[in-house]
Amino acid sequence: MRRSSPLLCAAALATLLAAAPAAAQARTPAPPRAVTPRGPLMADELNNIAVFRAASPSVVNITALGLERDLFSRNVQQVPQGTGTGFVWDTAGHLVTNYHVIQDAAGARVTLSDQSSYKAELVGAFPDRDLAVLKIIAPAGKLKPLPVGSSRDLQVGQQVYAIGNPFGLDQTLTTGIVSALNREIESVTRRLIRGAIQTDAAINPGNSGGPLLDSAGRLIGVNTAIFSPSGASAGIGFAIPVDEVNRIVPRLIRDGRMVRPALGVTGGGAEINRALGLPKGVPLVRIQRGGPAAKAGLKAFARSDGGVVQGDVITAINDEAIEDADDMLNALEKLNPGDSATLTLWRAGATRKVSVTLSESED
Image 1: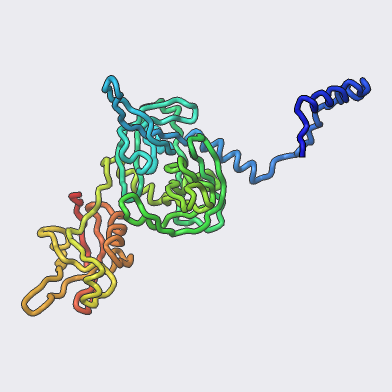
Image 2 (image 1 turned 90 degrees about the vertical axis):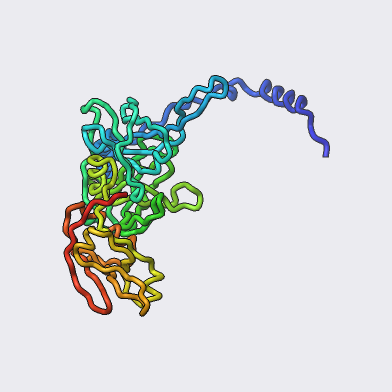
């Protein structure tokens, strides 16, 4: 089929327009549409607005900095290597974020909600719980701490809010509900973080370290991870519960690290339990001389010419069941050096309880 020439088509269109009546060529008036009144906002909308306005000044943008050497001058300078979110903990300038936001960074800069920017210093970190505390030197009037809530009384179905900087878009609010409780997620050290909050509030790269709030605007968690095949939000996000945060952050501010309480023992793995037919718990394979466990009379498993000499298996700490070494560490981290802990012990078929005064871990 033969196609028409573009020039011929243009000429034909010009002829038609020239032949059209002048009235047909006049522009049709098109005034703006009248605005339809919407009436008052719904109660949940008003609460969304109120929570965001109250919490927004407390949320910060964190830029992790790396070192880069100039190709020609060989000067070393700091360059952005990633972004995340954090929030104001107190008026002294302490900020809380995820450890993985600043992991391996040479420095960090913090941008407040008014777009003022400050150099941040690392105060302390606890990678096992993916938490870190930074500090900036800023006027106290610019530092608005978030009100702290509780996570132990959360219920599935509660309204929640996440504020953060997804994909570098600062001060973004998303809403959802508590989808599930007591989830387990893996930290950067491969240790399990138990008791995590699951939410369907959209959490994307850049939201890490930001606050999860309840409908009263209180901090109930630190947004940490998502489950997503694509890397973007799939409606399954996880937050570290605030009760855990409120236990760890003050220690990081005070000591610069998480000072672990210690029993002075080395525990064996599940293979020992299986091989010896032991109950669930941590079988002791070494007792530190002069340590808390030794002073309390605990005994480790040992070999002799006659076979295995029975030792103690820790099955509970303060009546909290212990199934493995990770359980034991989680239970101990709820306590402080100098605290007393009640151990439930199994030895050769008999169960007993002993009180132990915890020392400070050397790690």
